[in-house]
Length: 113
Image 1 (cartoon, rainbow, N blue to C red):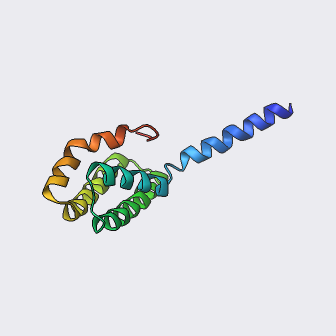
Image 2 (cartoon, rainbow, N blue to C red):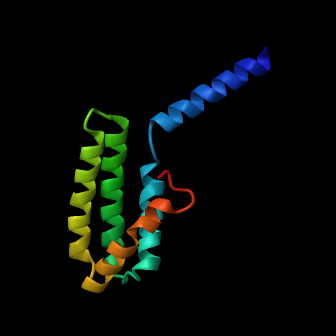
């Protein structure tokens, strides 16, 4: 009986953790590291990209926590806004590389995508 209660509590805890969505800090860190490596960010670009990723990871987590009927459209809109800001930070060559390889970021091991 004791094991059944512990198992039930563990399931409830895990369900609550998944319902909250991804960890914004971990998401931003993973994205920034991928961009530093893949896009060869300069020392000047790195803090800008890190701030941008953190800003949008927080917005995405908030959106995820408050899912509505148009969740998918809101996520796409938020991603579009982020990419507009990102394009201003990157060089043309980096942007081209980002466009070609951004699918890798979504498929990386450990990502929720």
